[in-house]
Image (tube, rainbow, N blue to C red; front, side, top):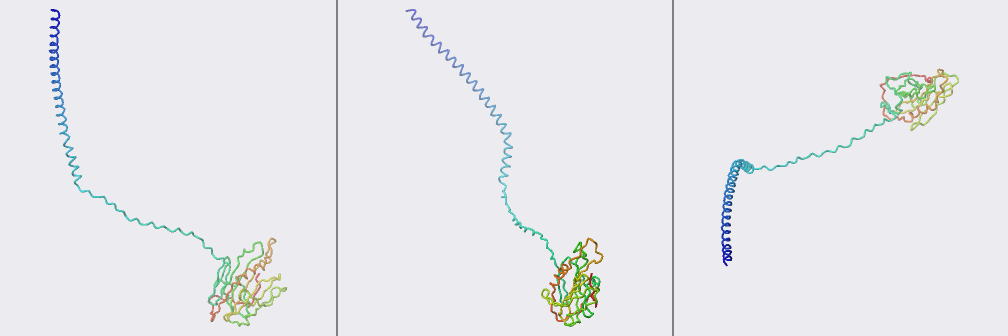
Length: 299
């Protein structure tokens, strides 16, 4: 019993000891917590004081910035005006026309307003009028009376028939204002330079739109050297003469006789274009005159 009582007493005292120890431990813990809290509070206070000092140092620029921002915000903003300049319409340039070389006509027209006569001739032929006329470059006139006036002479190029005895071909225009219509139908034939040849008889021919009195002068080879055409208009006698010249005895062995008919054919193409315009009174031409009563054959 005594043992049980002792044990019981011991059992009762042990809880008391435990309670006292626990109380002491709790008190120590509270003390530690209190000290830790104070230390934490002081640390936080120091941190807040430092942070507040930093914030005070940096708040001034912020205020300045905010002032600038307020000034910027308070200044009136001018709205941007977009000005659209009128653009001049680009004028479309027309395409440059292609240069087309104008081809020159192959013929040239000769006109004498004084006597109202005209004709056309190839451009490559040469024309002589006025002071440029001379007896050597013209066909001798074949009027029955002197007093004829040479108006123009057309000459074929001398190299028109290479390899032949061709030397020249002429188309001559003359007028005689003192002859009658009957006299205009006649020709003054010179004494032939070639005994074996005789002048042809005059005949009437129509060339183009004109009726002519025509005669031929033959050379030694029974071929024509010259042809004459007369027509009476405007109170005057118009004479159109054609002549073919050859080199004669100067022909070398390599040259052949030119086809005279072919050459005269080209000259007659000029005669086809002849036009005599009716006029009230023919006036005296101011150009030089060449008079001749003979019409020698042109070689």
